Length: 64
Image (tube, rainbow, N blue to C red; front, side, top):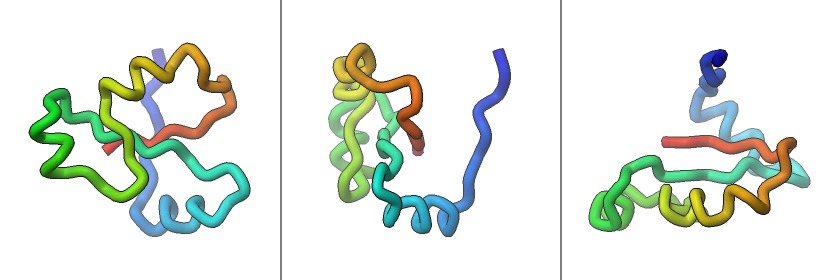
């Protein structure tokens, strides 16, 4: 399995204005950590797992 590419905060900010912005996922496992480190527009790791079957293979995803 290949390693996922990393991006800088500036690269991420520039992608937010795209027609299809990346999905932002907080990778902390607990709800408490998600509430503490949640960025606007992000979903929790739990929400991501629930949503995964419906995501397009073309969907860009950024984990933090």
